[in-house]
Length: 487
Image 1: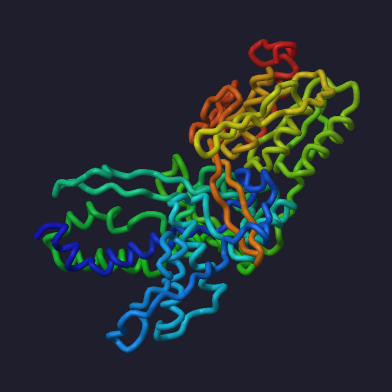
Image 2: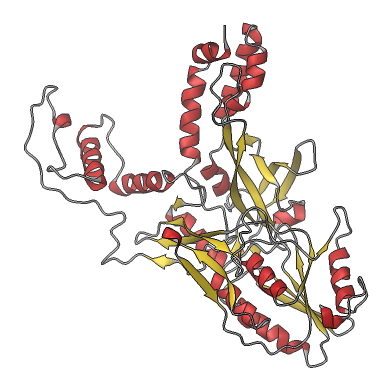
C-alpha cells in the first residue's frame, strides 16, 4: 500500500483539519507590535462619508423563484446585480433567513467577512484587527507594550519541491515562521534571553500552527507505511498536534495579551541543534523610551534609538544639544531597534546627515516615492552606528543612509525587513493592516531578507560590550588605523 493511498484512508480527517487550520492560521493577529513601520502614516481613520468597508450593501429584492424545499434558499437575493458585493449580500441574507442555529449579530458577521477578505490576500503582514487588538496597536505607538514585549514578523520558508508529482517525491510545503525581530529594553522577552531571529514554535505547550504537519511528516509516514500500528500511532500524534495547535492569530494575540502572567516559549534558534525553552514573566507592561542618551569618556556622545515614534526626532535633538560643543564623536545605537514611522526616520536622519533621501517606497503598480530628508544637521563630528540582527525596517534605512554619508557600521548584519505595512482604523474601533509597498535603500538596493552589512563585523560569541568598544575605538582612531577624519 502506498503512502498516498494510506494517507487517504487513515489521514482523511488529518487532511481536512489541516486545511481548516491553515485557513484560520492566515488570519493573523496584531503581533508585529510597532516593528516594521505599522504607524509610518499614523493610523488612518476611516471616513464615515466615504469609507464603506464594513457596511452592508443594499440591493433590491429580486423576483421569487420556486421553493422546492418550502423556503427561499434558492431565491436570488442580488436583484440581478453582479460582483463581490452581490455575492456577499446573497450569502448574508441566506444565512440570516435559513441557518438552523441562528446567526450571530451583524457586527460579528461583518468582522468575520472582513477578516476572511484580508486573509484571502495570503499575506501574513495583512490582517484584520478586532477593536481590542487595534487599541493595543495604538498603545504601542506610545511605547506601552503588553505581553512578552518583543516585536515579531511572519516569515515564509519553502520546504521541499512544490512541483513534486512522482510517487516517491515528498511534496513541498511552506512554513510560516513566527520570528522575533527584537526584544524591547526591559521587557520580559529581553530578561528571559529571547534573541532576534528566534522562531517561536510553541506557546505554553501548544504548537504554533505554522506549517502542514502531515506533509512535514511525509518521510516518517512513508517509512512506516507497511506497519499499520506504527503508521496509525504517528497519524494520531499528528492529529493530537493539530487538535491542540494555536493558529498564528491566536499565537500572536497571546504574545501581546496582558491576561497571562507568564509564558513558557519553545524557540528554534540558529546554531542550536535542540529547541530552547524560555520562561517569561508578564507581571507589568513594558514601557519603552524611544531615545536614550549618555556621555562616554573621551567626549563621545551615545544615543540609543529604540523606537521611531513621532517624538523620537525631538528627543534626539535634545540629546545632541546636551552633549555640548566639546563632543568629538557620536555613537548611534540601533541594535534591537525594530523600526517605526518612516517620517520619524527621515526627521532623525535630518539631524545626523545632509543626505537627501532615507530610501524609496515602491507602491502598487511599481510606483516609487522617495522618502525625502529635510536636513537640520548642526553636528560636525564623526558618527559610528551599532547594528545587529534586531535592527529592522526604518532602522535599517537609517543605518544605510548614515553609512552612505560616511558613518561606519559596527556589529552584525541587520534583519532584512523591507515591508511597508500601513494600518487602517475603522469606525467601530476595529481595523486592519495591509502591505502597501516594499522598501529600498536610496541607491535602490533591496535589503529584504538580506539586511544591511556592517563595515566592521562583530564575530559570533563576542562579548556583549565588544561592538561598543569597537565603535569607541573607531572614533578614537585605534581600530585598523582609521583616524577620526576617515570615520
